[in-house]
Length: 407
Image (cartoon, rainbow, N blue to C red; front, side):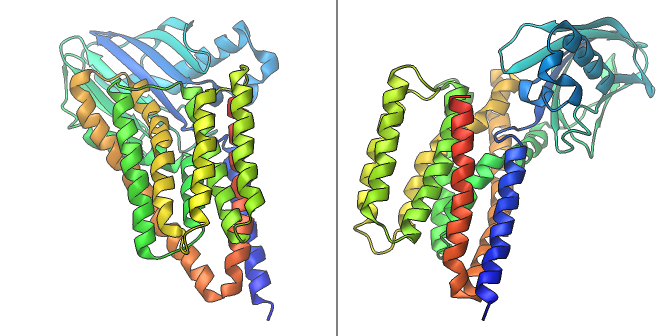
């Protein structure tokens, strides 16, 4: 008799836990860092880039410690955690780490080490091992007598054997590294996963699921390619904010459908977007006014269309496609940071996109059966699950949108 309320409370607890976890993860934080290694005989010059958000993870990097003191401590940390080893021994630093100029949301350092020229070399990354164990480090090595080589270092595999500096050992294709990078990118991307969860919460048939996943996949694959090949590169701040807004809008649609499709909420959503567009026209926020105005028009038309159809779930493929275009630009950030030469972009793009799809598919295949099982076990669970879950997703999406656009 009390099974349904108990199940609803249990599912609500799961959703709130997911909300708190994703918020603590600081949203669209990929926890990916990048390094370039120029090895010329016994000397190697290392340059490292990581996000300012990752730097804030360190307890000693509080706002009050900003400035030269923080730069010195961060440089020492990076030189100790990202090392080149010769016959197992760490190559000593011969030129101290220096802060390099860069974008406000990125931190860059460079330093030099010296190794015995005849030694077998290994590269090791322990960056953010304690603070973010799922952190991925993308390393690019160039010897004076060979092409650039790429590899992804993880907590499970922090070492990369390079061989001899005079004749580096072949390490195979980097295609699989990009697949790993793509899988890690989607699995550590709380906002992409929350967006997919919002799309799946209404349930539906396997055909509905295929439509949604296909729409999202086609869209983000398209914009990922456009961004990586330089055809279109919108400002990252606007993209990050729009990803948060897309999550909130999908959750709002869920609540509207579960609440009986009343007229007032759908107009409130369109008016709210129009007001955000007016504020953007006056210089407030990271998202352009024209984009927000377009979203307001889309919301008004889309919700009007939903009132005319008996079964709204098939239309979710259109939502997944439209917002998938935005998420694709978000995915592109990792490959753009890698600064790959043009001749390697096609392989990198295919491998990375394949990794994203594998990670996304794994999450969908895990979540969808669980949601279906919960709803079929007791029909009374369905509405509380949709409402509580969508409310948590709506709050999360709005938090990300506001913090990214106006924070």
